[in-house]
Image 1 (cartoon, helix red, strand yellow):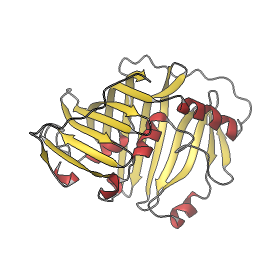
Image 2: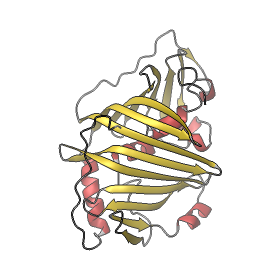
Image 3: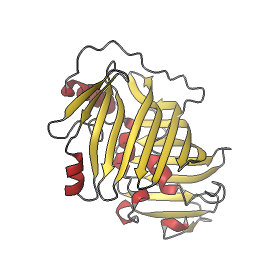
Image 4: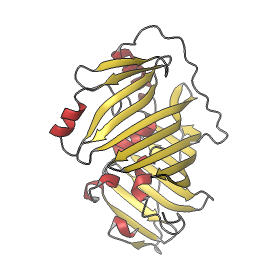
Length: 284
């Protein structure tokens, strides 16, 4: 893999999606939520209601300090970032090398994307629907937002027919399973298929979400290992994601720290006249 300083194109869209998938703990004061003794499965409606109320109270979030490790088939790339998110409207991601030099800025709206390569003074912009199709380009605004804000009313809701659950006492989890996932993958094209959602038995917070992308047979599992409590709103402190496709395995570990909740931050993005526009994401 090429150095981040020299060429970002190889991981641009991976970082966008998982930018998704981002967080730090570097001196983080976030602590694992204390769990209470659990005696019986929580009703699905009660679990989802609590998580949905948490999500609805969020208007905007600034993840000011993010560090991550991107691993492809055993080879690691470290990066730093910050993310400004205005719910249902805008996501701005600034990505730096591990030494702190900003090289890439990605601005995502529900229908468009703008990518600035600040090292090469280039930019690319287009509608999301016009991005080339393929495994790396599957991610959408709503999916990235759902992962960062843990929208259990969307991506991680138990919205499949007649879900079955299993109780994992060793991991203190209650998991709801979509037993028709493989059939749904066969029936639907170019869609994310929900396989499983697990909740912490003591807190009711989402601890794992598993899904597949029907067209590319990609299996994705997202783990929420730590939470931070900001003004009685729970946001992720440590996220891990694993993606498997054929013989390739991609892994992200993202830690988030210094989070501002529902406070104003600048969102205007200006492109200098010295920047050259490119018309293919591969040329950025």
